[in-house]
Length: 518
Image (cartoon, rainbow, N blue to C red; front, side, top):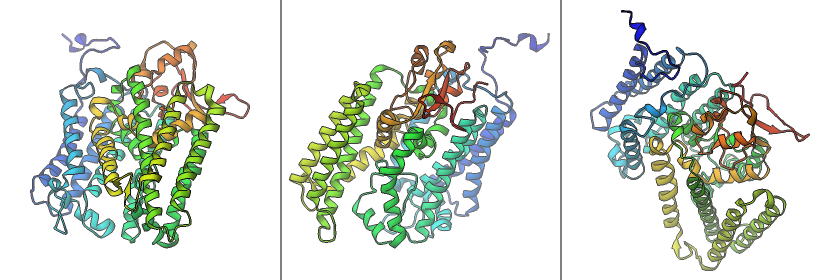
């Protein structure tokens, strides 16, 4: 009997398809690359630089071979197949194992780098970190740190898995362009350029991160680094401030928060590439959305208060050379924040509705904190707490535990945008700007919707997109990062990423609209 007679012809194929020979070869190469790194971790002598190149190349080529075999053998179109039947992408055994491995790696990276081989107090590196010494010496002329190792892995996965993402969504021009964008910014501006600056004896500066994501931008050591490096240091300081108060709001006005969260940000870049298989795990429950709004505003308030405290401390310690006194800064900050809030509520209060309470509560908390800082802070403390210790706690809680251990380590368990949804202060600020005055939104055509639920399932930010589509409502949620996947997986072309034109009508922007439905 012909074996094809037993093949199930249903379009909802229940049988798990076997991987091809090329996919097996790709997985073998990836496994071989990781095996070399494991050998380095356990102390096997791999000092010959070629081993590092072989490991990195093996992983990269393996991912490329696997991705090409997996996606180019199929026609263009929606490729989210069997996600809820896979142990890896449905919180099964493989998902939990991967989550434990990632979480464990981040714990070692942030708090126990010596177990990865970091040499203490001038001692030579060993293990995995020593394995990267030749590459670090090539880039900046010094031994590797745990952050150099992490940055190399981070960039490798965004590039290799970004290529996989492009093949998966090659039917959608928007997805191709934004993925190339995050790959470019991660490789050039977040990895190579900062290392080159250090080689040239300039302060380390990640051009992709900006305040408040770059929470140490206003630290005294950072400001002093800018001021002591001449015109270039001043350029970095001024450009960083301009990004916060001028460039970012303008870009958000035209393109929404997607210009950063989906096109530039390294956290978003890793979430979109390495985290793509787990996007469906983001909870869409109303209770989670309520928690999300409180948690992200609490982190934003904490970040703003910490920054104000740090600047206040800097002005206290450098009163003789500062053009601004600490009292002027404190009361000027209060006046500025209150005035901006009053203007926003006057013009947008009715439109914001329930969101107004989050804004008012956040502003009151910040103002009270500034008053306490002004009344109870000294030269080296902020409200009776040593300023360095306070920054250390902030770095531990927000910069390490939340953004790293939970934000990435929990990809296989809670979805790929845990940090972006619940903790990123940058996402909170851009979300407020997007909600208040951005021209960007996702428009819907409810008459075309067939309620398949693809849009809601694959929304990484936990938005129930289908409910908006069924009612024909535009999606203007502050949490939306404009990734466009909801539009890319819609079989009916119901959703479009659009901007509001001068005449009040909506229209697709060149290269920024959706082309998944033709």
